[in-house]
Image (cartoon, rainbow, N blue to C red; front, side, top):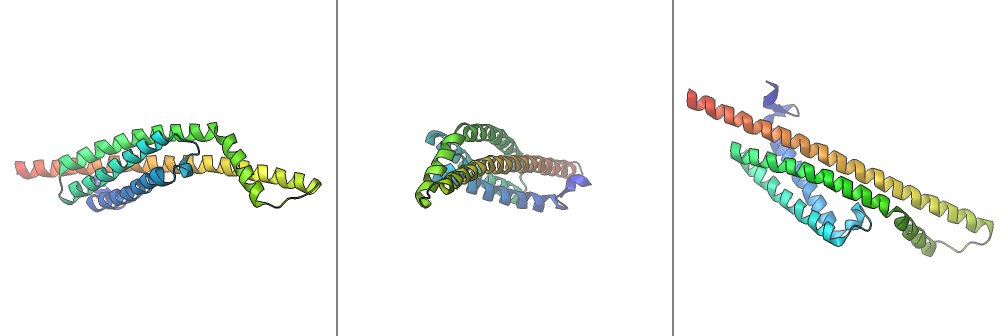
Length: 187
């Protein structure tokens, strides 16, 4: 039966593996939002980075709770874990909207900062060479910001899809445990 498998392996082990991976992802995002929020989005208000950091810490605790539920084969615990994972999907969607909107909103400010930093590091050129260098710096900084928008969007979308997949598989595993208990009681 296809509901007995997750990623080609037994559903219990597959769910444990996916939950451990999600735990690592959540720890990464929590540390980024607390330590270096400008990596995710330049100019994001500090209050928002703290809120997202706290949410990811709660998701870390939820992942630990999910691993515990899976190890003890607790259908109720796993189902609660799946529901909270769906909440994480909703928060990821909000995070995507906020981060991408903020990056687009502050793009010019980030480009100006990049140009300013590049000007301090570069050498002082004269005449036509200086114009070419300034144009190259502007283009490089613009390309960097566009790449940042794309990379952040892709990472957040993939994290959202991964969490969605995990929620589905956890819920399916919980239902399998319920069915196994019902069959055990009836027999």
